Amino acid sequence: MTDATFPGGGVPAGGPTPGVPDPEDRAATTSLGDLLGSVTSDISTLFRQEVDLAKAELTESAKKAGKGAGMFGGAGLTGLFALLFLSLAAMWGLGELIGVGWSSLIIAVVYAVVALVLFTRGRKKVKDITGAPKTADSLKKIPETVKPGGH
Image (cartoon, rainbow, N blue to C red; front, side, top):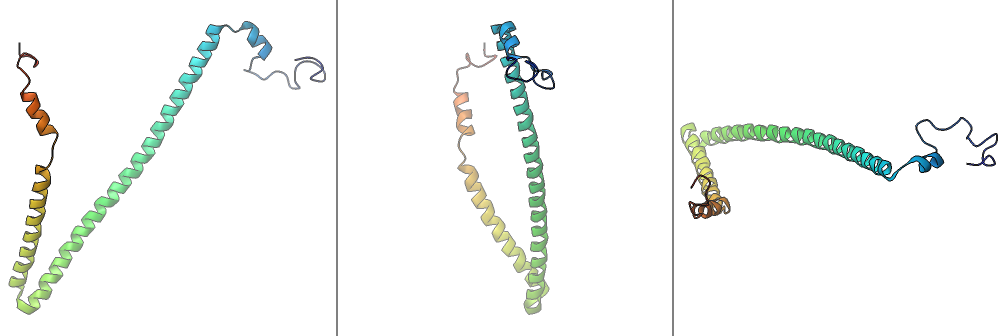
């Protein structure tokens, strides 16, 4: 900086900024190693800050997911109670027409049919799973000499 740039001298009013080297002095005393070290330090700091930010964002997302899962659990439990009381209402309603014993049996049979349908559909879905069982079969075909401990 020249004296003509700043009135009263080459230093800005208030003096040099603490912690910030004068560019002319820095260029004269900074080596390539110092510059690379500074860049490496800055990149490392930036990386750490990004990791900390990602951790904070993931923590916030996990909290929201936990609250959502709790709400789903509460909804499921409340739905189960609703189903229970609707079943009782249907049983008592039918009981007025054909007797409580017969209405209880009819409601139980309806639930048994629903359970059977769900079971058969679930069993079919499980049978359709591929991947790990085929991998297990492939592992069985590996010669004993290749397996660990098969010497």
